[in-house]
Image (cartoon, rainbow, N blue to C red; front, side, top):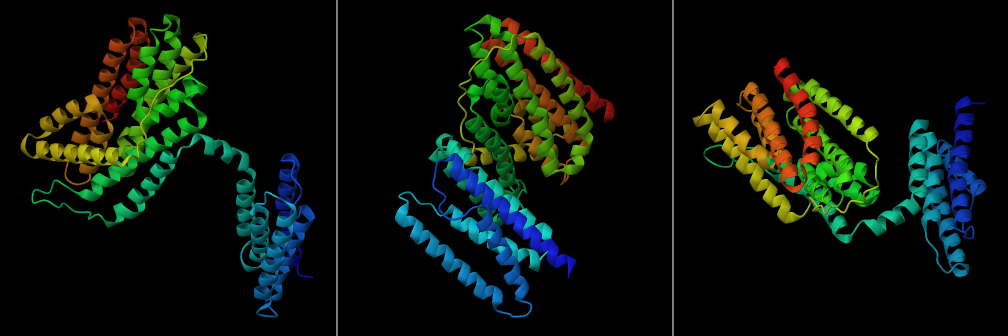
Length: 416
């Protein structure tokens, strides 16, 4: 007997058994009546799928006929069960159809593909309770934002021309929009993480994921909280430091996507600065009382259409200013733009410099300008903490900046 036939027959039984077992366990833990079948039934369905596909070698239409029969059986089972069960879903029935197809795949392709689909099915079937929790957390506005993200990325971006549309060669709609999608996408990930985990999980969650959305917003919120209890300064400094630690990581990701060649010069400095910063963060963590401080930081959804358009205007203006400065003022003009832009935000200037470094701007100039923007932004956030918080909080946070950003700057210049 063919060893491959034996292998696939056993594998179909195993995969069907696992999917059926998940359905049985779901019915048990949900206190529901088993409405279609369990481990044994699903094992037979998968084996039926494999044997039907195998028989098609001898009878060309066998798998097609078997598929129709399987579909009719599932429909009949659904109708019968609907009569006796008041609340009836169709998840198990669809799982049965997919299990049948998985069995057929074992004959038509490499076994790894069938195993992969079975694992995906098990994962999807097993996340029902988690999905219900997320449904209560994610709002309709968040879903609309996700749809807008897909439209921005897969509908608008491909149709934009990847060339300057003005006579001076300053405005490239494709480059501007891809920056908007990139920054908003990173921020959206952090925003959804905060929505799912909840900022009320404390300093670590609010700091790390909040830093992906806006480290400035985290710094502002936590600096204000220190006035409620001065003894919480270390805990709040920990949160601000965690949020700020995402700045270098985020900058590295943005540079790598836009201009991988430029990223190579920053890889080691970013790693050194980040690790040095986390060393100080660890010190804060182990020397503080680690109070559970609920955070209620209000973040804007980064995929609001108006916000996206405004972001596009900012990126376009930054690109134009850098290009004009480089043409008429040379390196000093680029550094001046980096100095001013870095006060408010580093995303626009980093992405603009990374993009222009591919099309005429001296990479060394871009390298130095990025360092200037990061230092400027760090000083701006330090001033914000000092103004909104206390002297003690400022000292703790500024020490983090000196260690992390200082290590980054020194390493960057050493390797330049």
